[in-house]
Amino acid sequence: MSDGAVEVADLVVRYGAKTAVDGVSLTVPRGRVLALLGHNGAGKTSLLQVCEGFRPPDEGVCRVLGLDPIADHDALMPRLGIMLQSGGLYPWATSAELLNLYATFSANPINPDFLLDRLGLRTFAKTRFRRLSGGEQQRLSLAIALVGRPELVFLDEPTAGMDTEARHTTWQLIEELRADGVSVLLTTHLLDEAERLADDVVIMREGQVAATGTPAELTAAAGIDLIEVRADAGLQPALPFKVDEPTPGEYTITGALDAAAIADVLSWFARAGAQVTAVNTRRRTLEDVYLALTAEKTAAR
Image (tube, rainbow, N blue to C red; front, side, top):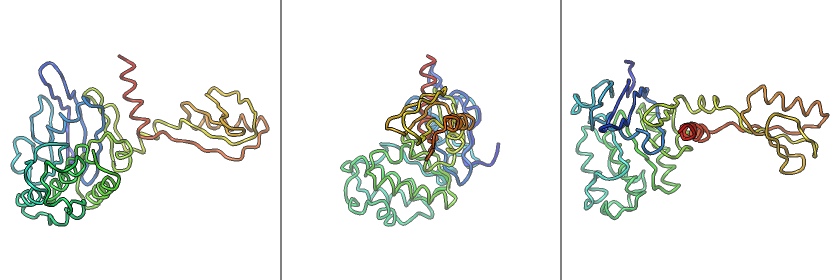
C-alpha cells in the first residue's frame, strides 16, 4: 500500500445479511482533505467506524497512519482527532471542563483558551454541555477533536447546526489544518462545503464507490449543461438541444453540452447572420454530479 494517511483496500462491512460497505478502496493522501459523500445508508459511517478503530472489517485491509486501527489502537489514538456528529460527551460538564479534560490526554495540546476564543465558545465556557445549542455542541466537539494536535482528523458533518459565521470559521480552520500538513477525512451533506474544502472527493452509493476524483475533475467530466447567448431577438435556432428565449434576444440552450456542441450552437447563429453580443456557459457543479450519480441508481431500481 502507498504512504497515505488513510489507506483502504477492498473493504467489506456486514451487519448480518446486509452488506453496508461492499469492496471499497480509497486513499487519503497526507496533508489533504478528502470529502466522503453519499446519502444516508450509503455506507459512510460504517467505513469511518473501521478507520477510527471502532470495529474491524469483515474483509479487506485498512491502514491509518501506517497502523492497523484495531491491533495498534493504543499507539494510533493519540495521533487522531475524531469529531462525532453527536453524543459521547458528559452532559453536565461545562465547555471549559470538557476541553481542558481532553487537553490532559495529549502530551502537547493546543491551549484550550485559544480554541474557546477561536471557535466562539468563550461566552459558553461555563455552560453545561446539555444546555448548548446543536451548533455550539458541534463547535465544542470540533475543539475537542483538535486540542491534541492530531496528524489526522475525522470530521462527521462538522458544520451541522452551525450558523453562517461559525460555518465559515470552521472552514477556515480546516483550511489551516491542511496548510499545516494535517490530513482530514470529512463527511458532509453540504455539497458547496465539499466543493470548497476538498482536495479529493469520494461519492458512495449503496456501499460502493460511485465516483472519485478532485472536485474539478468530477465537474469537468460532467461537462457544460447551459449556454447563454445574447443575439438578435425572435430567432428560431434549429438545434438538437432545448432552446428557450426567456426575454427577447436572451437565448438559453440546455443539455449535455461539450466543446463540439458549443461550436455547433455558435455556428448556427453565424449562419443565421445574427449579431452575437455575449456568450456564457455554466459548468455543472459538484452538486449536479452528485445528484446525477445518485439518481442513476434510483432510476435503475
